[in-house]
Amino acid sequence: MFVDSHCHINFEGLVDRLPDVLDNMSSHAVTHALCVSVDLETLPSVLEIAAKHDNVYASVGVHPDYEDAKEPSVAELVELAQHPKVCAIGETGLDYYRLKGRSIADMEWQRERFRTHIRAAHQTGRPLIIHTRSSSEDTLRIMKEERAEVPGGVMHCFTETWDVAEQGLAQNFHISLSGIVTFKKALDVQEVARRVPIEQLLIETDSPYLAPVPYRGKPNEPAYVSYVGRFIAQLRDQTDEELARATTDNFFRLFKIARPAA
Ligand code: NI
Image (cartoon, rainbow, N blue to C red; front, side, top):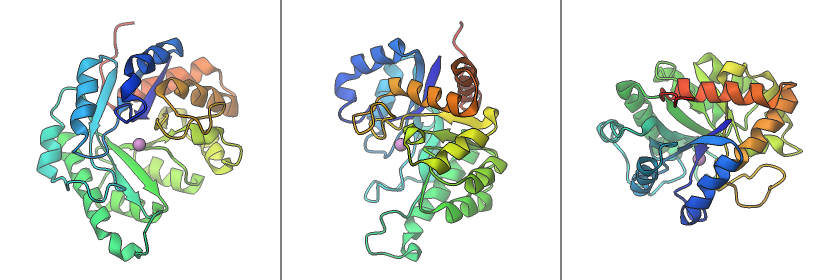
């Protein structure tokens, strides 16, 4: 059995066919999914899905790409994280990919927002879900300055080099790989997939984005995390079952979710 450690099933294209999405999960032996929050405005839809479905969990956070979203305070994140299905803070982090004509110095608001999330993770003891794009140096630096290794967490949809992965791993972070690992040219990500210690590896879809081969370019959904898992198993020369068991164990341990009775 596989688990999807990061999806957005409250987004259009998935939420409107949710019964099918959940059915497809079970027919692909995908047992659980973590529905990740991107802003406070849409958080109620995340919490509603998680409250309704035993095998769906939630996070609380404001994504660095959502510039106009309501800015959360530490206290607000801590309060919202009290919901019984919330098991993580995020997604948070830095994204310098689309600077829209600005310089990195202009992105202080992102760095402040990131620090707010790390402080909320300290207070709640919940792990962080970190997004980093074209910003690994600042991401790792702020993680260090704010002692993110204490709550720990996951660097999700990882697309950086092994060097960056190593620094994240050393800070008590897991590495989560998405369908990108199945793309032909994703050689750096494939190297990371081979080298991450199995006890710090997670898999995800980040659906509705980034469908793995053989669905590349099509809408993605949590069921397809099984393709991500099988592809990585092959890269690592492990069986599908070994890879599934390890990444599922890691998921329940990191997010402190009680294992359902077998
Ligand atoms: Ni995401």
